[in-house]
Amino acid sequence: MSFTTLETTNFPLYAVNVLDKDHFLIAGGGGAAKTGVPNALNIYKLGRNSKELKATLVHNFEAGRRPIMNCAIHPTSNVIAVGMDNKCQLLEIDIKEEVKNTEKVKGKKKVIVKEKTQEFIVKELESKVTVSAEDNDSKDDDDVGFQKVVRFTADGQHIITGGSDGHVRVLKYPSLESIHDIKAHTTDVDDLDVHPNSRQFVTCSRDTTAYVWRLEEGKKQFQLYFSVNNEDNFFRIRACRFSSNERKEVSLFTINVPSKFSRKAPTPSYLVKWDCTKWLPQLSQAAGIEPLTQMAISGNGIFVGVGTAEGDISVYIAWNLAPLTTLKGVHNIFVTGLTFLPSSPLINDHPATSLHCLVYLLTMLVKLLPLKEEVNIVTGGFL
Image (cartoon, rainbow, N blue to C red; front, side, top):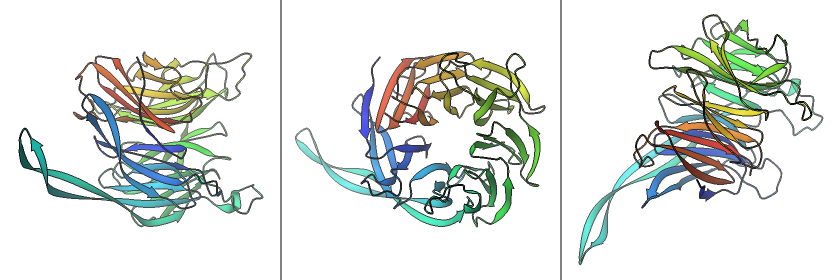
């Protein structure tokens, strides 16, 4: 099985997300330093050129001096919330469609063919400072901290952010009015995710703690604990994702890494499935000795994908955490972003028999594996 290079970008990627079944976005940048590496957000359209899968750049948004480090898409509109340094910035993607008459040669005749074209325009909307300089220990005046994660609630009414200052902020959408400013952790908020009921959310931090919160009150509800062989506090949650199955049963999935990593005596990372009524571990699966860095769940709730510090990608079955497949050496170093693509006739030319793994950072790659279910994965990691 071989990789096919689709595209190259001239900036490192930190965020990846899916707009619809045919479009995805990637974002990142080189930061404020004048190194010539841009800060940008690119939108691509997936398709095929004969039998080859291709990604066509349809829009490039230049972000100025601020790299885009994280993003979330509103559930019912074309608005994106992105983290740019210490701010949450709202961007609106305006798609204009136009039908043009194009002259083409068909045999010995020239015919007029109607073709639909799309123009993408990205507009800056409201922004809000979501990381406090007062909690920043850096002596660099330009280092004001940064927003590490952002999520919309499923009902689209709130945005929740996590920062390098350990604060979690709940904002009203679209005004970005501050509802809660919670000192949730003592250091960086590594990740957060919102329950499908839009009333609860989970945060995890480098300080080794993870909590369940009630959104309306902004109050802590439970602390999440996971241990192996009764060794308390040995693992910390690195990433968290809620998912619901076809029976509308909600589960929380987390990747748990050793709080102290040792090459001489490595301890495996774990993929954990949680009971969301008791907030206790329901299942766990050892996921190799390389630290896990990213996680995503397919839209149908069937698959869980994880990325590692060594650039590998693994896929598991969600209901029992059984390993499905592993792609070794997708990137040369850690995976920074991972998401599943929805099924699309443009890219799925082998119905129900293929796994499409789409990989992005400095290059974008695709790999097909035989499977009984279609899976489309988008990942980001340094090459």
